[in-house]
Length: 340
Image (cartoon, one colour):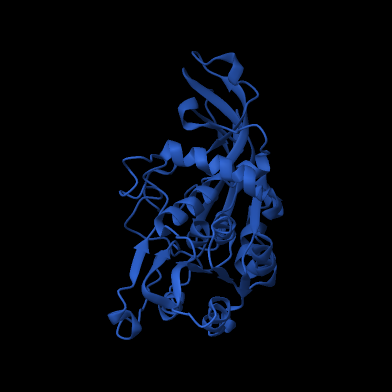
C-alpha cells in the first residue's frame, strides 16, 4: 500500500510524497494516522536550517534514529488507529486508538511495544499533546518548585503553557509568565498564571513580585527559559534570587547564547539547569523511570485537556502552508496539527 510522507528538503522547503509501505510482519501492526502535531521548537530549527550538525535527530526514538541531513522525515507526535495486524498480534488490537513517536506520515508499521494506548476519557486531540506534556512534566521535576516560591516562565508557546498549567497546581507565592503574543498571554492567564507580561515589561517583574511579597522581594526563586531565544537567558539571570534556579528547556540548535556572568550572577550562586525530556534526572532514577513519567503525563492530560490549544488544522498535503504560518505569523498560533 501507499503512504503519504512529509519531507524536509532544505531550509524553508518541505515536500509531501507518496511512498510504498510494507504490510505488517510478525508482531507488528499497521496504524492509520489521524493527527500529528508540529513541534514549533525542534521542527522550526529544521525549517530554518539551525538543527545541530553533530547529533542524531533523536537517538532515543527508533523512528528518528540517524543523522540530521536533508532530505529527511521528522516529527514525533502521532495519534492513530490500528487497522491491520501481523502474525502473533491479538485481534483485540484492531480499532484501538494509540499514540506513537512517529514523523508526519499517513500510515506506519510498528511493534505494539512502541505504542501507547490512549486512555479512556481522552480524545485523540488531547493525546497528540503527550510529548509536550511529558516535556513540561520533566521541566517541573527538574526545577523542583517549593511551597511559597516565586516562579517566572519566559515563553508561553505550547510547552510553556503546559508548564504553566502544571505549576499552577502548586502552592506558589507567585507564578508570572512572559510572552510577546496576546493570544498566548490570555491562555496563560486562563491556565493559572498570576500575571502574564509582555517582554517589554520585563523590568516590571521585580516590582510585581515586590507587591505580591509585601516588601520581602528577593527575586525569582525559580525561572524557566522556554522561548527558544538565547538572549532571554540574561533576563532570567537579572531577576534570579540568590541561590535561585534557572531551568533551560529551550533547544537553541546552532544559536549561541552570550551570557553576562560578570555581574549579579558571579556572587549569587545561581544554578543553571539543562532539562531535556529524553532522560530522567539521576536524582529521581531510583524511583522514577519513563514508564512512571508517562503514566503521570497521561493523568495530567486528563486534568489539563489541552485539545483546546489546537488553533490550526492543515491537511498533510498543505504542509508548506502550515510551516509558512509558523514562520511568518507565529503569534496567530498555539498548536498546529496535520490531518490525514
